[in-house]
Amino acid sequence: MTEPRHQLTQLDLFAPCAIPTCETPVTESGDVCTGCQNAFGHMLQPRPPAPGDVSPQLEDAHTVGVPAGAIPTASTNDPDRKANQRCWLCEERRTCQKVSGRWECRACTRR
Image (tube, rainbow, N blue to C red):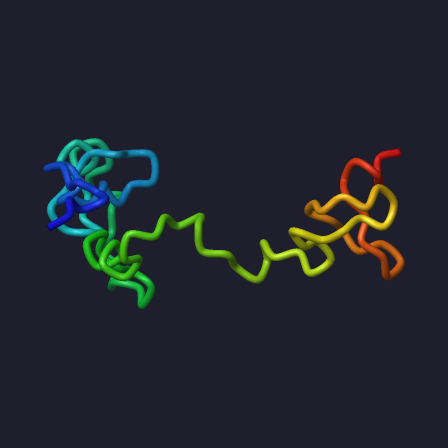
């Protein structure tokens, strides 16, 4: 049997405090730590959970060991740039950008 890729530590089992600048662990996602409760007291108001609120355990279960940045999104894919294309200027296979219908590598584009 293989070892899991990501070893959970005890602190990974807790969610961070709901106050944006506080990283104190709390038992439930959306809870406020006692330090923030003491500091902000009456200014804190309970709110119903938003539809997008997901506990860290469930969020990790849905990623199946794939880091968040490894999944390409539509905004990160540049349709005019493609790997393993032959540059029409230097005729090397590189990651090229389509310029006027032809593939140009980064080195040739700078010239």
